[in-house]
Image 1 (cartoon, helix red, strand yellow):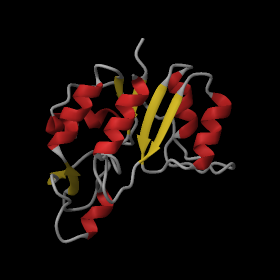
Image 2 (cartoon, helix red, strand yellow):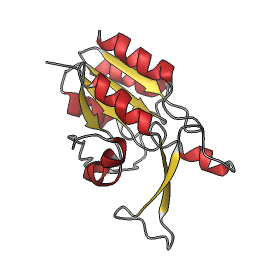
Image 3 (cartoon, one colour):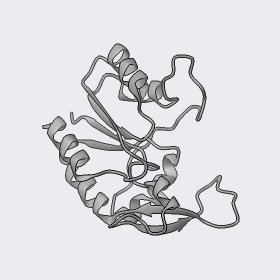
Image 4 (cartoon, helix red, strand yellow):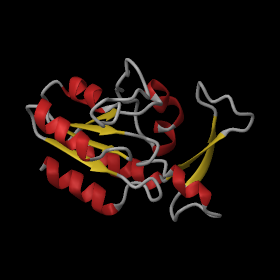
Length: 167
């Protein structure tokens, strides 16, 4: 059984912080979107790089790809097709954006539960040291937690690290 690759959208695939710049990062295009819950009058600007779809499809030979994003199933409607990805399973978070007493990211416990002992790699812009510690203490399988800078998104070295870890 292949390890899981748990993929967050906002930060890794959509370097949303870069929207503060006058031009998108090289290789990215702005896609206006209206996912459920987006109540603003103007569409949500989402930065995506078509190259990321190709990179993720290449990693699918080594991983089972899973959305680990607040977009949940809407990732398959709004983001996946623009990257050339097939529909992927997703983590259906029981609750979102809650605070934790130990400083872990709200997703971390759910990620560990979802993995259910399987090896996994997780890319997200909110991962920090308490998350790594929590996974080490509560997950019996191998795990790679990779924090992605929301100003730049996934880079070549991230894809190389993911491929190398799964090898």
